[in-house]
Image 1 (cartoon, one colour):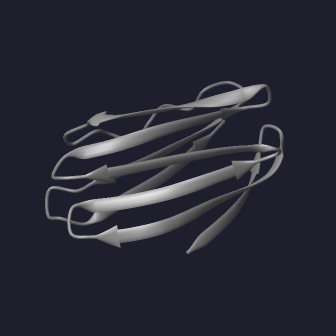
Image 2 (image 1 turned 45 degrees about the vertical axis):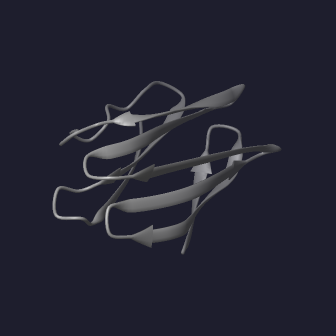
Length: 94
């Protein structure tokens, strides 16, 4: 599945490359940049932040993490594994 959206540096895409019980993997492309993230295991997740001058990725145990907060001039992507084994994907922008 691929989701197209407007990122801080122009058009961007989020491609979910794998979903399974307690697992989600994805790739984000924005401008000339590319970031990958993935979570495996209950309560695990990744957050990718896109900005016009680049971005960053962080993966760890997120538990029942709430929706990420919007950040100025950024798009925040959160992919987590839910407590029931499902994948949860959130895209937040200001």
